[in-house]
Every structure is written in structure tokens, then in C-alpha cells.
Image 1 (cartoon, rainbow, N blue to C red):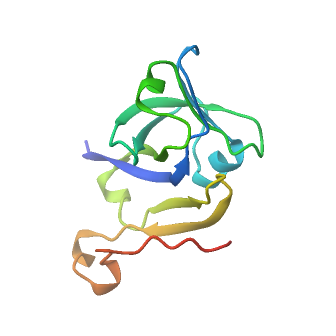
Image 2 (spheres, rainbow, N blue to C red):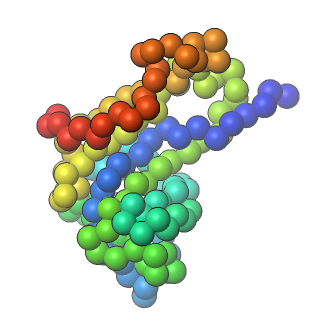
Length: 147
């Protein structure tokens, strides 16, 4: 049996939290425009990192209103986020090790209203390709460019 690894296939980078609702049963509500761009599906697990305060948690996705820019933490997760915080939402999948080289990871970049500015696709190098200058992303600046 082949070994597998968790692979970060899609993320919404530096989105703005639009709500934190303690009185909901749980999860994170996200605008479907953002879900499609990052290839995230409802009811699947995501990690959510609060850039503002450093909190990190795992929850599951539910779909919000189309075009709303909604990113709302619900239930207990609302204790770790407040409206206006910056966050990163990341989806993972378990992939056989042999299928990771060449696999694409998507990063959806948004503005302050969670409108999509750009979508970057990063191809994962194989072990024999590590160390190549084109793979080096150290101190890569966060560029907000319009799609």
C-alpha cells in the first residue's frame, strides 16, 4: 500500500472575516464565488488561520449567499474570530505520494471586501526538482493584482 500525504489543494488567502456568530451550530459560512475559485466544497473540512490573533482551527464549510463576500465563523469558532480579522482558509486532501509531484495548489487572493483579485496556481515539484531557483518562494511578496 502506497504512503499518502495531506496536500493543500486550495486556499482563500487574507480574506476578511465578515461575521462571528456564537448562536449557530458550527462551521464557517463562505460565499460560493470564493468556494468555486479555491475548489472548496460544502461539508468538507478546512483549516482556518486568524492572521490577526494567531488562532488556528479546523471546521467544515457551509455555503453562504452568492456574491456576498461572506466569511463567517459560527458556533465555538466565533470565540477565536471577530468581524474585520484577516484569515486564511485552507482545504486539504489525502493524496498518494506518487501523485503529489505536478499536482496544483490554488491560492485565491482577495481584497478587503473578499472580492477575487487573482488566483495563483502552484505546481508541486518532485523530490528531484527541489532546490531549483524557480521553486524558491522565500520572502515572496504578497501581491494584490486584479484578475
